[in-house]
Length: 451
Ligand SMILES: Cc1ncc(COP(=O)(O)O)c(C=O)c1O
Image 1 (cartoon, protein in one colour):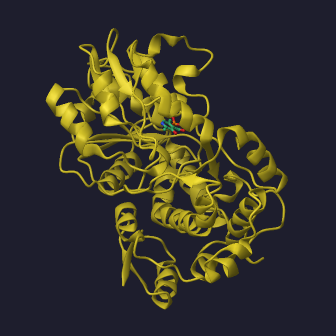
Image 2 (image 1 turned 135 degrees about the vertical axis):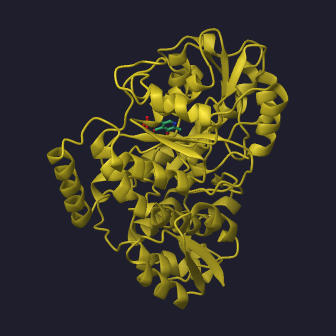
Image 3 (image 1 turned 45 degrees about the vertical axis):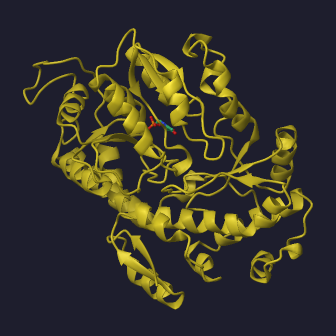
């Protein structure tokens, strides 16, 4: 029996359980989905109908969206959301840290298995405050990978520190610990690894470096909500509630920090409230207004129920891609990143010939498949920023990240993608690369791909 943990509060669990038992998959009722999904994925054979029954059936032949936000919310959730918002407004519960914030923080702390969770108004402000909490400021250097969203290095620059880029592992596109070692200097004040695309960086070596040099680590975990904490050392992780993420909170903006360090927790709790302690208008440290707005608190509480399910659906989609596109990999048309670490499949990435990438994207678009590139312009190549942020002497080591930036294409893998859309994307890839899906050696897969 294969065991999956699915959010115990998801109301259709019984339906899932019934489905699972007919497909030889055992579900455990627990909301911490990520790690157990990862641990079991290698042994799982999904029944052919499982994705069909779990993913919606809609596909009208129109454009297959990369991630259509309009699909994220059903009427019942919207009604609940407006009802709770109405209550907050009626009770004047709009500015201060309310009971609902405490409730959400308790849930998030438990969900992410840390000692403290502090809500913020975004992942970006969470990163900024976490760095500040460790004393990062003017004249300091922070080591990070160059292939992330602008928020990662903007947070560093906002503290006044200099981002110093370390190259990535070409097989995972995650920061390479050897490159981190090379980027260290006497000015290094923090290391900022990014758990890209939903896959967690292997942390043992990084925390060794951190311990050896006495340099703290702030983890950008904005892509990886739902992964169990596998480590027994203290960590500080920053998450985003941006609607494009797996948590997909419907209110557009929000974030939180999970930390095991009481000083970091208390610094951020105070910073987000203008540096006040419990006493209002009494500032005990630097600060600003980075509180999570009540609408996001309400939206986040409602959405907590679906993270396990969202991650599970993304796992199904990713697995189908890996299985069905294997012939294209064998034919050397595409390759996949190694996905050996804990993973919540925020993105499914294929690597293609850089010379052909634009043409491939164009052809996929002609087949009505929308794709993404995360991220083609690397941080140190952003036109509005000068090159001071590359550490002199290590620039050459960014070669892997530069190559990665030219080769990646992200396929639609939102949890709102439907079964028929998934099949259509896979078929389109076969068409674009000039391979008949009938040539697929696996009979079952070939049948799966038949329209
Ligand atoms: C890797 C990464 N870090 C940080 C952020 C910033 O999060 P937010 O949009 O909540 O500020 C994002 C969001 O897109 C991200 O993808």
